[in-house]
Length: 382
Image (cartoon, rainbow, N blue to C red; front, side, top):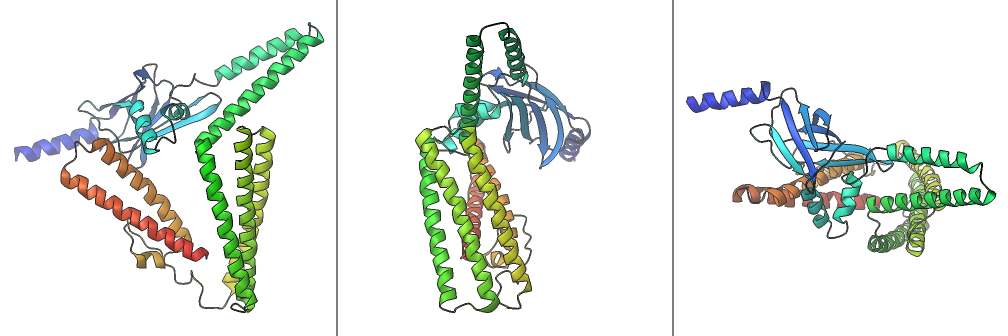
């Protein structure tokens, strides 16, 4: 009875009394300051605050019902928004305090990437080592305006010098932007080589699909409205091939020049947007044809919405689901697998053997479900 009373009292304390959570965020011993940090419990935002110079912040949470919190942080610096997210990591102590050491996160993420991403790149993308807000750029702009005003009283040679400095600043900014874009998309030189090989394989695969569908029409395997749909599918595949070729050209140019100019990046982006618009139009035509078709062998005719909170779908479940639902389910499963891996990596020593084995088995099953979903989606694209 005494134990039961103590447990009930502790729970009531968590729910109604312990509402201030104290977090300290540091990177290699230094406080991570100026970050707006939000606390989440079971996916729901419960409060936020801004870290001080020591990286400390107090977040008031109404109805604190868990000692396990997820954290999201953001800060504007180096002329951009820097964001980070930490899930399934750390537990509040008896004083509702947790010390989040970001070097542990960057080290873990770098190792998980197999050396593909460095800790320093992660620290920069998270805003752990940036100079602060965009005030630096404002100061630079103010100084530039002052310099320009002063240059009006100088010779033409001075004007040329200021122009040259502006061009150099613009080029450096373009290089920084490109480097960050490359980092965020995994485009190191090795990554670009891998992407080039992947795009080449994709283009070859699309060509094979186009030939297969063209042969179906030529040999009369599809007729009437089915033939019209197949012809539209061929057109959509050709646009998809052009999109892959556009990306391949961009990758080849990056490998050749290392850094693309703003004009070059804009050209590739505009071409991609135009092709995507064309592809969307063709897809809508295909959908309209399929909806008006009286044939009974459409692949999505008997799809169902399958709800399983644990995501452990069977082959039969997957076959019943629509393509859209399969993609949404896959998008939910992959973060779950990642969170489980992080938990196994960071908490393996404190976990019991049974708990650890159960989590490993669940991750294996979820990975198998993802494979089944990918196979089903590939079949539907053929």
